[in-house]
Length: 181
Image (cartoon, rainbow, N blue to C red; front, side, top):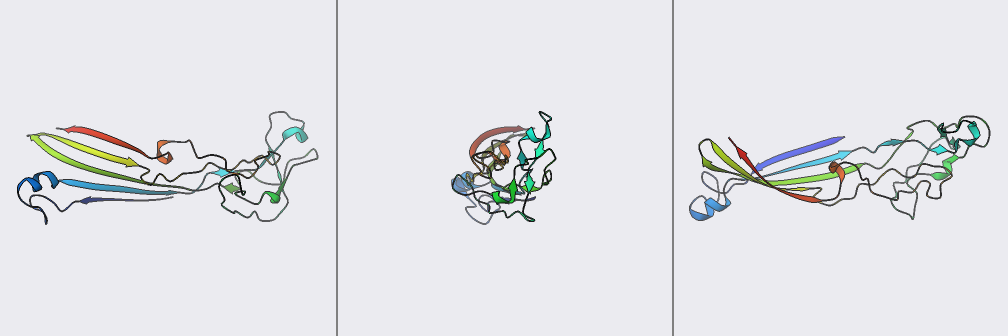
């Protein structure tokens, strides 16, 4: 996982490099921008098989891994699998499968947040801060793990985006006003 954040005071207004006087300084001065870039590795998952061969209803069953290495293709959608689906097979006898728990990792998550804010003096010691924020500014989709059931029709396919937290959701904007005292 990796995160990079930055804050930059825009060079406009009183005691700055540009637009230092008059109405332009009053309007353009005091603004800051910030950004956060987040890169996350994907979530671990395992390939399951029907538990009927265990004769223990409700017990998880691992699929058999029939290739020594599982190629990760990284595809999204219904056209191509995310990983080599021919590296696994259902278990047909009364035993546990040969693959292991959490042996594969799903697609990673990327996110870029951006903010613009300005603090205004109201009267000592009261200040107000106006904020505009864009979360997932690029509106980049973050995909869920692929279907992990070896006998499922969508086995190996990623069919949805991750509906998880706001951290990796679709783009949205926030406006805010904060009083500081």
